[in-house]
Image 1 (cartoon, protein in one colour):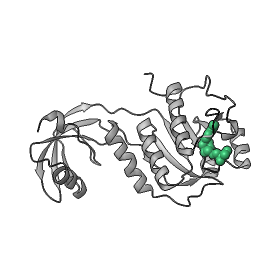
Image 2 (tube, protein in one colour):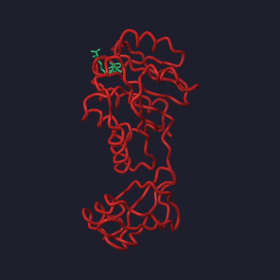
Image 3 (tube, protein in one colour):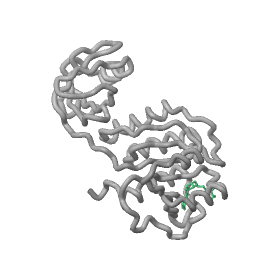
Image 4 (cartoon, helix red, strand yellow):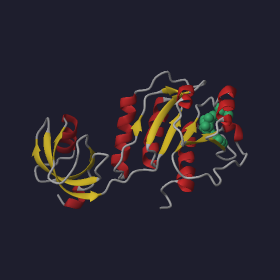
Length: 245
Ligand code: SAH
């Protein structure tokens, strides 16, 4: 097989990458590369570990239950996303999966599911959501995988809010109000998206009073939470993120 075709396979590995570095494969990865994609000894793949960029690696051993790859050369340096968190209230499973996938593609550095007054989900499968973020990074050419945090209460998140981080508070009560990010400064930010039921009055009052919060409207229509997450990340990336650079 030609290297161009093989180079299309990108895998995230939890193993530090560097020149000559050997990388053992898990059973699942071996099944994917050798069983599904039919790769064999001598074939090449692209690897990234979230810290050392992307590497071209050759298959040195290919087995049913495992295998070994050897890193040849770096093909791309690590490209960190901007320091942007996506905080969102989890909704139905498939839509939550979508939000995590899109957040990884859109260049969020961290994904924080939050429980708000009107959030239906009591718990999330953090490990499953993390896999969605990894697959999105593999697919979109990213060299970084955003961490998916455990579900936490919005109150608790705001109580321990890190100094210097601004919050783009997407407030459905501002629908059609034309409230934008304006001349907001660059730096660490977070986007906050509410659940299907929106924010409670108490939450809105607290959020609006926070000195680091910037209440924002996402246009003249009320968007579903999954649409709102993508729209908000787009706006932020365009105004303050890495799209222009
Ligand atoms: N049930 C609510 C809508 C919730 S939409 C209502 O009818 O008012 C889910 C989330 O998406 C909201 O909490 C908000 O964070 C975001 N959102 C959707 N449309 C928006 C808009 N036009 N402006 C700002 N935020 C919006």
